[in-house]
Amino acid sequence: MSAPENVTFDRRIQIELDRDTLNFQFGQGVFGPVTELRSLDSVRPSLLDPQTSGPDPLYGICMDVGLGLYAAELKRRHLLFGVVGFAAGNVGQEPVRSQGHVHAIAAHSGWSPPEVFEVWQGRAIIYAQEHSGDRPGRCFAVVADPGDHVIVPPGWPHLAVNAVSDTKMVFAALCDRQYGFEYEDVRARGGLAWFPVREGDRIGWRPNPAYQASTLFIGPPRRSDDFGLCAGSSIFKQFESDPDSLQWVSEPELAAERWSDFTPLECVDRTCAR
Image (cartoon, rainbow, N blue to C red; front, side, top):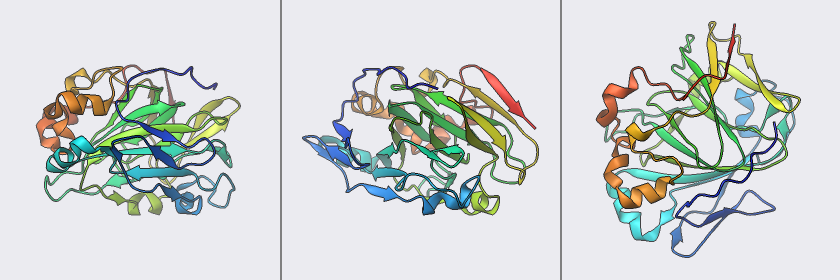
């Protein structure tokens, strides 16, 4: 799998990943914290081979970034914008990835919040499954390029993958300000229901025997006009022009009728089953 051609789109916010590290640099008028670096040891409990080697740190993350002009409005709406940069390379047989988690229930809404991913650099795969118990339900691997949006619904366990081994990958995300990560169910089963594995220049998938049998659907992200997301337009630009259109991220009940049969794919390119 080769790196996609660079796709130019207006992010509206000047945040760049340092060329030599996994630290983020902020442009004029942009606020954000010091980059938090996540070590290889922190994801070992969810790896196919927990004793394997790989890049360290695996990724850098900055939660609560944005244009200072809109800081108060983001807080008022319980919305949080973040950026994550993934190292190039592999972790044993697997690509560089995050560990799977579920979003904790936000006190202000009573929901486990959804999340919107927006790829900035490289190619990402967002893996998500319906449930964290023994029966994972429907499982999806969404392959996304720069400018693409991927929605993970409330309560779905998920992780992000750097799909191309020789390049760094960067994505932005919009989530609930009262975010929290729950790892217990995932770690108890040694990961999510499917492991991404390198197979030459492509990504294959291996089932996790700790779960009951499931089918993995693989394809590009669905168009999300019905959620107020415009293809080719950045999340932050949309927030700036119409913040109400993204309020469902921190108030998932606004989209309650759409979550029950939601699919994050536009179409299915292939499947894996066991």
